[in-house]
Image 1 (cartoon, rainbow, N blue to C red):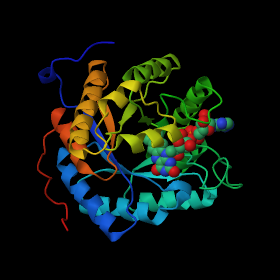
Image 2 (cartoon, rainbow, N blue to C red; image 1 turned 90 degrees about the horizontal axis):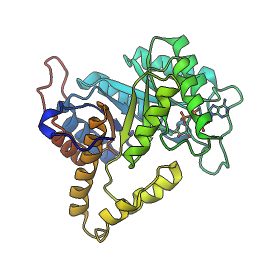
Image 3 (tube, rainbow, N blue to C red; image 1 turned 90 degrees about the vertical axis):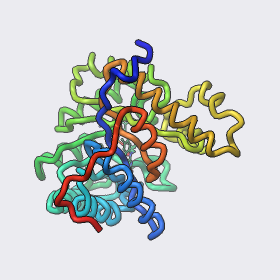
Length: 300
Ligand code: FAD
C-alpha cells in the first residue's frame, strides 16, 4: 500500500465519535464537557454504547435523548440482544424512535460477567443479524453493525465471520464500524476481503487513541485486537510519563488515519472513552476545525 501523502492535499476526513453512558454525576459532567468540546468539529454522528448485558439501558437512553434535545449532534444509540426478549428490545427501539433517534448501532453483546459463554435469551434475538432484521420491521432506522478486521474472538473462522457481516448487511445494515486495530495493513486486507465478498457499504475503521498502553494491552487481549511489537517500543519507558504518552498517542493515531486515507478510506470512528483531548488533537492534525454551532439548539 502507499506511503503517507502530502498532508496539505488531503481533505479532512468524515468523523464520528463514540461515548459511553456515565455512572455518576462526576462522570456525567466529564461526558458533557467531552461532548461540548467535540461538538464544534461537526462529526457525522456520535454514538452512545449500551453496557454489557443491557445494564445501562436507562442511562444510554437518557444520554442519547439529551443529545437530541440539547445539541446539534446526530446521535446513534447502541442496542444489544443480550438478556432481553425480542418484545423488550423492540420496546427500547420504539422508545428511541419516539425520542427522535434515527440511527441504531445493532449488536449482539457479550455474555454477562460470570457466564462462560454467550447464550441467546430464549425469546430474544439470537445474533446481531436477527436484531437488524427486527429493527427494520419497527421503523426505517439507519443501522450500523460491528465488523472485526482481526475476526471476532469466538467466530468459527474468519470466513464464517465475514459471512456473518454479510448477513447483517443483507438484513438491512447500512454501515459497519470496526473493532479497533493498530496494524493498518490488516484493515486494508479486510477491506479487500469484504469487497471480494460483495460488501459495498462503508466499513468505517474504529480508531482507539492509546492513553495508557499497559491497560490497552490487557483490554486488547480480551477483544482480539493485536498489539504489534513496534507499539511496545513506541511506549517503552513512558509508564510514569503520561504527558509524553499522550503526545505519542496523538501522533500514532494521526499517522494511522493518514495512512488509511492514502489508501482511499475517508471516514473514521473514534473511541473517545469520554475524554476529548486526544481525539480533538488528532482531528486537528487531520484538518478538522471547530465550526459555529447552528442557531436554534437549546443550550443548557
Ligand atoms: P454478531 O454479529 O451476532 O456475531 C457474534 C459472533 O457470533 C461472531 O463470532 C459471529 O461470527 C458469530 N455468529 C453470528 N451469527 C451466528 C450464527 N447464526 N451461528 C453461529 N455463530 C454466529 N458490546 C456491548 O455490550 N455494548 C456496546 O455498546 C457495544 N458496542 C460495540 C461497538 C462496536 C463498533 C464493536 C466493534 C463492538 C461493540 N460491542 C458492544 C461488542 C460486541 O457486543 C461484541 O463484540 C459481541 O461479542 C459481538 O457482537 P456483534 O454484534 O458483532 O455480534
